[in-house]
Length: 323
Picture 1 (cartoon, rainbow, N blue to C red):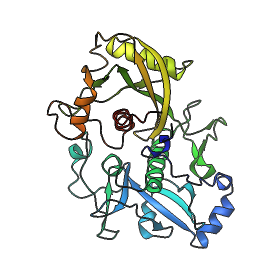
Picture 2 (picture 1 turned 90 degrees about the vertical axis):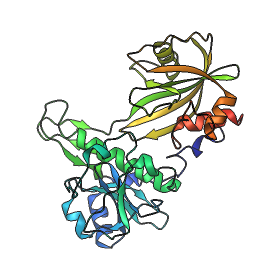
Picture 3 (picture 1 turned 135 degrees about the vertical axis):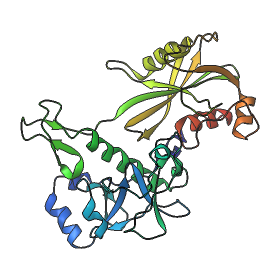
Picture 4 (picture 1 turned 90 degrees about the horizontal axis):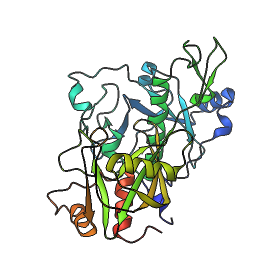
């Protein structure tokens, strides 16, 4: 698809400087030269310039706040000027009057400001700001969030249970107890625009805002092709048989660690029979109704979140630009 890499988190062509990951001396030399900038995380949120929330903050590697980092720096890549870009996490910091309920909502709009950082900076949830960021900042933010989350959830060796340690500038964990080597995990997920004539199949999950519908999606199982996963998931969730399946585009989705395979599929029937254990509801929606929803003129349907690949698929379907 000619527009495939215009999806949010794609198309930035970040130089990941992979050849430096095992060269601790070279990385340390760049730090000593002041040729390193740090992207900061707190509980999965990213430090951005406020109030616009349109640009990641890049801190010098010797900034005092980094003394409270809860993990070693992770090498994200190298910018056009040759400076290295790294990520660090200060999730051990506890803001005053922290509202745990707010930061665990479907859409977290809260901002946290650290007293040791400039007043015009704040930690913001990536889903809130993803469409405001440049393609480069979006890729950096998604990469930083995903790799930091992996280190938090994979501290211990899956072979023997001992605590492992970060190596290769954050892109590997090594277990000294049994020699196990562990690499960042990415979970493959299919998300599909299923059509039949002028209509598309949309569903909603429990806990979503009232009226919100999106494309069906599900994890790819071991030993399964993308096409087979599309057909299985649609049938399991909505009872619809799917024929031809075509890949459209992919999107890294760091919530927490997925790679979304956007596909298009042709429905062979239209009799919906939902599995209530899988989804809350599924409906057929015409192009006209989806267009009205995108324009905010369909009170019965809230469109898929801007920045998500479901929104991308639906938008290109409406514009007849799926090829």
